[in-house]
Length: 293
Image (cartoon, rainbow, N blue to C red; front, side):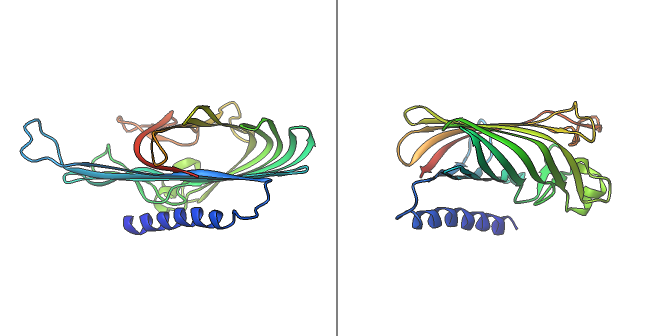
């Protein structure tokens, strides 16, 4: 199963690179396209090592791509982000260390300079099954579309700089999908036990910045806030993704990626057996092959 998911991800990444590359000749300059692909490998081999340790092998793959269009009074910004990582040791077997699939699209019609009447669509989930390895036995907590998040909103987009975009959609529907019968029966991710969809209607604010502040050093940041009008609107859901890319040369670089998330409807299992919303944080530091296009 893991091998199948890996090859599927690899096929999507290669297709995402080849198709845009073929379309470049004669392409309208109103399009701005770019992104990066990274493959990072790690391996540890020990033999009669007095300090102890264990043989290990792992990898992490990243693919980020954007295609933005601006002509006349029309604006279209598209983003695709994919991450997947595994680590394997003899004693603990194979563990997933990173998993993300994110799609976003914004269409805007200019009302005045740098201000657009817009519609926003985002989708996010993961590729493979996920487990909480802190429990014994390990606890099954996620898979593709469990959860899956679909957000559709209407509002305004502001682009005061080429590297900054803010979108406020005061009319926003967000659906949380839990296709797994096991997780839906447990009432995970806000769904009613036995149901597969949790619907919310509220306001969403998203701010994005993509900036090269030094030669061969660039940063991307996306900060989003969501308030559900229908239930506890004062409890704001927050997501903040940051990626810092430090290029060594054309083919190798170091990337630091952080993800912070707080969702009032996602209940995290604690050591004492209780469940409740918690601040979630993930950090990935990688050194390896990195190609920017």
